[in-house]
Image (tube, rainbow, N blue to C red; front, top):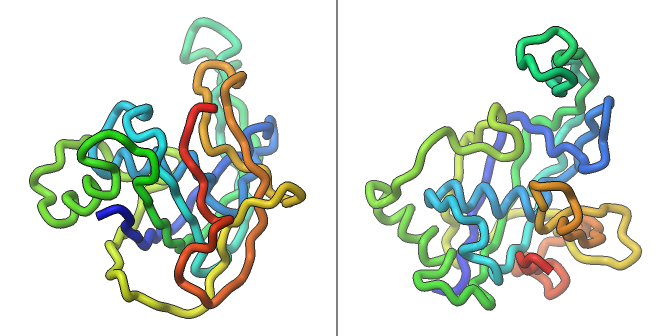
Length: 210
């Protein structure tokens, strides 16, 4: 199988904007890099380079509600990890009732089995998957409620496609450099409402390091 579609439901999450500092803003939609990491976690893959070349298409089923909370953040100011200076309350934006569909296409994923094939295998034979920890989207506390493998002929109501647009108002990472930020890669996007359930050409993002 070259393409699979998964419906994902998350009760609450924060997709923290890369340039956010004291005020932890969230992206209004999970970035492709975050969704790719979740898919790897689902199949128990720890090498994020393993399936470079995979393409993702993301569409919101509904627009989540945004709220603001105050919570304790840890930033290491001193070597003593328990020092009070390392903990500070700050504001954080949260999204609730997040529902989206992600289409996964093998594209130039040259590893066998491909990511779509491994995802299909995970649903067909869950006992074959060796993974650890809770399945999250974003922070480790943002646990996923359900992930459902959709049939090929599935069709719902309208959705909001995340499409690439050079003049788009959303700048989202599709690859994140976790050591510094020099190799983090971005695309500009817009949310485009549609009742068509087949990914448009501009909705595909290739996961790659360049």
